[in-house]
Image (cartoon, rainbow, N blue to C red; front, side, top):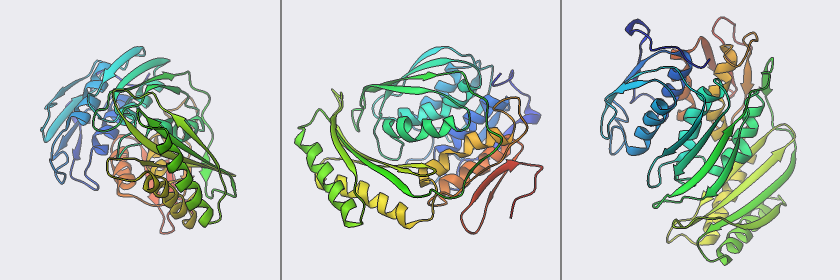
Length: 365
């Protein structure tokens, strides 16, 4: 069962929304952890360092989504609010349709709600809004990088794109099926990525001339060739009307891990620049010692914390260890929030290794 009936004030977790990177991730992680643990929380100074500060529509959509899948209630849930109190209730598996509106990120909403639902039972979500927007994992990152990583923890699911949604129109839609979980692992360790096995470039266009996809692809392939990487490449159309946009996604399959890199087209930015930007991200990753890309490094913290807290099944607490390409403010902020809700410890070594372990265990050298 993912959560209990609403907790009392003695269990309330106090959070500072301006801490660390000070963005919406604090709220999303708190909502997930609150629904799973049954602990209420109050967050003050929401996005205090952002312009504009306070809750924006996409953040409010996560609160409403959390309420929709559970018997939860909140205080202060309105656009512009700088304070929110959330009282979690029982999460209910089922079929849900949720709309963010315009180009708010549906992948971020999905990641917020996925874990509470995955620990409750099979469910289906239809999410409408932005599917390929800045400062957010894209639909294809979810499908090709994030969900395969979740399977390593025994968590299952699949996503199906019905219509892409680009900024500013949004209007995208995808369906997610959350399946019964498998047994979780005893531990997970990704100290190194290993040798490169395959690099795939996919250039997408939605509701725009298809030659743009070819220009993006050729630029990405040429930029990768300059650093000695040869790849498989293809162009694909995306159903996107009434939205329109382009994106390049590069999937790098290594011996031990898979990494993903994406660049979005925008008005006034040449197609060639989009392909080159995606390839630049690959080059930076190859120069790092990371086993996983920096974004997956942030996103592994939630399942790893659940594994360390014995929330993924009837198994003893287990440790996860990995080396991201970069220790980001998002990662550190996420770690701080999760440690407030769960009996876990997140250690970041000077070398950049991240270890998520039960709170009672000693850090490994």
